[in-house]
Length: 409
Image (cartoon, rainbow, N blue to C red):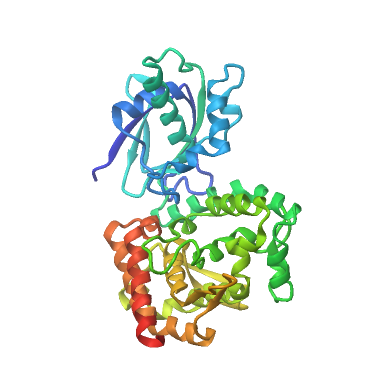
């Protein structure tokens, strides 16, 4: 089998077999300290490390202007602050890894399709761009630190069916504290008022380390998927970012509510439809499997965008045996923005038909929607490419737009 090979320059590295999958999967873990300047030189010589397992879209550089990224750059240039002690580093999935012969400082990484940076991609990209920009601005490399290091974890032979779920889990924790702070500032009060009498309310996690099974960040992502004020149905702009995690959603929510004009906040304007938005999220998850092509149902090992696991759906109080991963789920959910209108006077959002009709519309279109999802996955064999494909979002949305206009207008 042909792999893409990348030589990682390391200063210190340790290796250990996985305690559970040493024999059946031959999984090996490497922990490395990598000089950041050496990593930049390796990137210039070999090209970027791949990002295939990472749920975030790494062609979009807007997030590099965030406060966190600016602080990261300041730490990199601070001689008295060891970068590796202030940053969690980068996790990389590979098929195989081995020391380069006669070069003990290098680790040869073998990448197959679907392998690459699972977590820490923004850190890697930010550091590489920082060095590029500094050299371009100053015309030389004199100010680039030569003694800053990055902590890199390399994991071999991770099954590709695990990649998407592991990457999503790795990227999930960074915004937990931020939502807890928002809750402490009473920013979720209107959402709480709408949902407090629902059977699942006590499952919603508003505080860090609180019990429950529904993180408030998921609710914010679902709301963003239905936001017709920012993602109008007659435009070709879609909330693609919601599939990959909560980071951008929470950041945008915090920025807008901090202004203090709650009545102009899109999240406030969609409170009337919020409970049904959450229900539809679970309704799709509860029944999608029945609409899959038989060749998918009979070969789930070839379709890792479907998770075979007993799962409780709290919004509709139902258990399922098969679930959709978010890259496959959110484009479908977002296509139901076609059923959302916005009042011309108070700008509040509303359903343009009964919720019963909306659920029926899902059932009538589910088979086509699942075929489109299957086709999108089979184009690249990468789960996250389903969610990050702007074409796929538009394709799904257009189908539901044609159906809505034909059926209800």
